[in-house]
Length: 57
Image 1 (cartoon, rainbow, N blue to C red):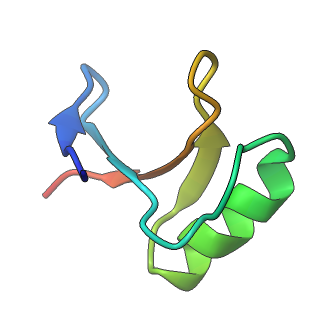
Image 2: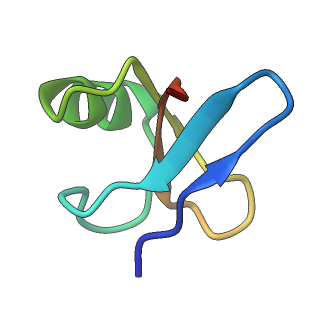
């Protein structure tokens, strides 16, 4: 499931639907997120999922 949420710094986060497997290397996540139009990507700390970030509108 994709969940959109807003952080205090007005950054929206969404779990990548294209990233497969555990998110271990941030660079792979960043590339996938940027190819989807997001500004950045990061690996979640506990579940190791790729989270894409962009400024909220």
